[in-house]
Image (cartoon, rainbow, N blue to C red; front, side):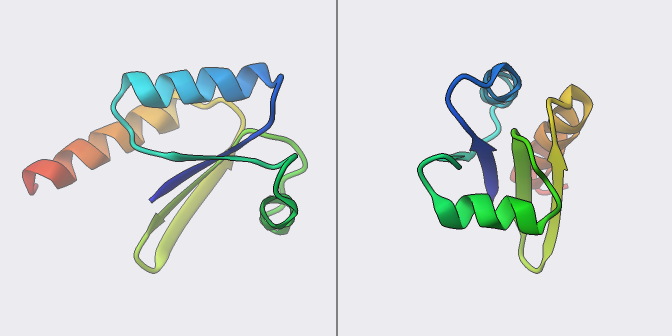
Length: 86
């Protein structure tokens, strides 16, 4: 499960969303300006700005802040490998 924490008017958020969409990464978008619990969640992870990407796979989780094309590409590759059963 991939969650993109974002807010309106954030250029890095738009770039992150576009990069994930163009690489076929399924994700849920959460606007932290409309969701106090989501804002608290990313603050709890140590982030004070968006975008924040949270990837949960069972008990394992990874997250990063900012536009990071290399991590998005790695995630897309991992998801493709899971789909074909590698």
